[in-house]
Image (cartoon, rainbow, N blue to C red; front, side, top):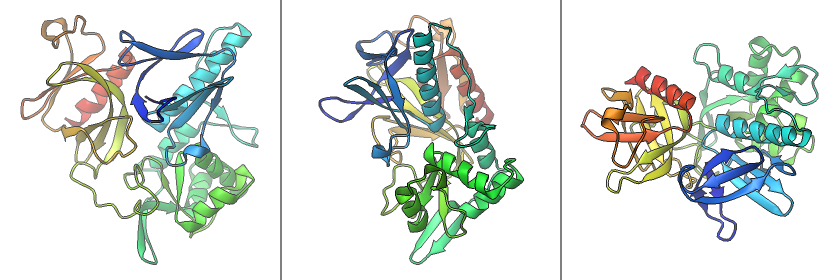
Length: 341
């Protein structure tokens, strides 16, 4: 993830570790220089952060006068960190064991809604909502859907029993930055409506898109709907997140955000401290690559253990070495990459 500097307000890639009593962050991995920490016992986690309206992946950890501003690599990663930090802090104050759960209570509703699961269903190519292009005046809003179509989907597929509850659920998805308003009508309502449960519009002319839509990420309000995508950026994002990557010349390790797309199958990597996700530091087609977990016989220079490492050999015989944060994360990346290679 990325942290915002306290003196110079630029973004720097940092490696975060949630410990028993603190959230610590390091320059490059837990074996590198520790740059700081924030205590959990009296902390508050703020998310979403509306003052960072063009950075929906931002969260803040506040402890008294100290504020740590963090930007995750994806919505799933952001929500997982928010949940785990809050739960760890609550457990520390209550002197009990930290337990994980991904289900949150909906706003103004007695039933439980798993927003992450609902988002995955909305994006599902078979049962999900249809994304279309909407020509309005001189603009074309690409890969969008109307508020009315979201409400209809929530009632027919999502299991919501009334349009009022569906609007409330849409407002939750909007408030958690899973959806973004597109066009003047939806943006105006999201900005001015005081009741947070009514910021989503059940209207055919109110347009929305997914926050990780290729036509939204890194764009400003003047050109977010008219992008001409380069080769490799047309595919649907199937996995994204931060990994450590070894440099080709200096063999040093740096945190990079990786984005894996299908059809065409491309893997791009970015500097996670930069806002614009249209200018990758590098990337290559996954088709024909050799993907494997590292073993002790072929470790990259300077490495003593194969644990958590992934080895990628491209069709041009370029070798990439990346390191995950956990064994589970490495396995998830291996499965996603091998499925497309």
